[in-house]
Image (cartoon, rainbow, N blue to C red; front, side, top):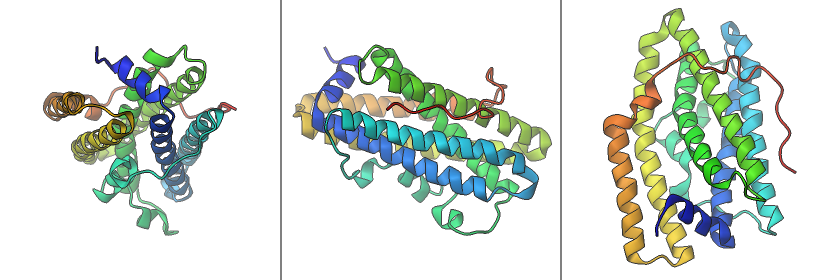
Length: 260
């Protein structure tokens, strides 16, 4: 029977598919780490209190990248080159979502509008990350190799999402509500499409590695397209709504130690 759990288990139990999965994840986290570090360095004078939280966000992303590399190392595997069509973070940048690398490579301080762009982008992508890690946590919490890593990353992603809600609400109260909502909707629409495209690309690569039948591939592709249609019409509301988080000042503390 084809289920989410059986699908994940099949991918995790095969060295080549596991290597590709971890390589994709590690690459995205490293990218996020660099981006947040540059944003923290360029925070505008009026938002300097944000800099340590943004730096903490980046440190968490770097930590996650190291965790995925450590998981590969435990199985004697090395990372592989990430296929361009599966590079979620770079595809978002090419669509103009978030702050461009060209902008972040300059030494010119960011503006409040840039910070709104960064936070809105993070709020949408961290929603995705939080949901994905909770799904993995549901299936792998007791896994001897993945359990601790998944719990740690899931906790961090929930903190990142709470931080984005809190800071966007603060800026909304400061008079930026319209700009925030407009940017959130732009980011959500683009992210949903890119997530669909990346999911289809990852599925094709996994199918090739694992020898999936055309029928199985068709069923999985249909599921991805159905999820995309739902998100575009209804599900994206969860990505653009802002609410006071239960976790306050979620990125105000020290970073946690990664899995060895």
